[in-house]
Length: 178
Image (cartoon, rainbow, N blue to C red; front, side):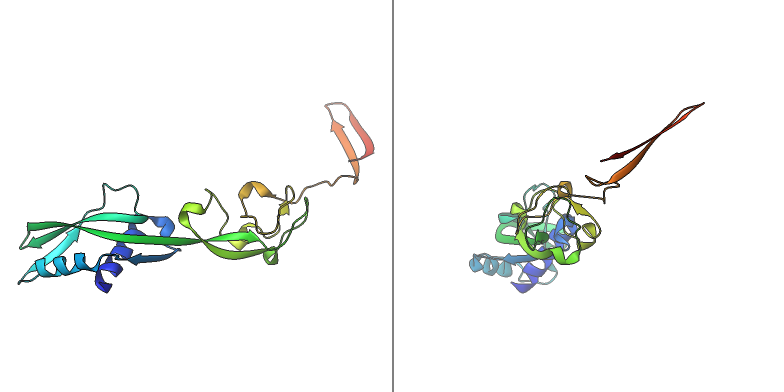
């Protein structure tokens, strides 16, 4: 069982790049299936193979087609049921963040979530938020998304500013408050 689980895990990580940094667990809920496959493998030169190329969903409870091969010829086909659970790292806001607040690595914490519950493009790298500012208020525990953060603004509201317009034959300077 351990060999099957290890090989299946390796195959899944090769097929689904997002699982490479995930905490992935494969369980075989029906041990009797392994007993049948083990019996099929009795004999010199027998091996097994599987082909998951046609399967689009490899998470949750999946049915995997297994083929028993004897000297290059398929001698039996079986279905192996496996339960595949994957959790990926996601950044969460450690506390409430105000609009315009500068973000550093201590503003977030890393947690693992089931793949199916992680929004597309959720931030997973602390370096992605360092030196950025919140574009709006971010509630404690929120999954950090790219649209929530931005670079440091050049001008803040209420800053004194010099506005200059340059043409071919003129330069206009005006002082103001942003």
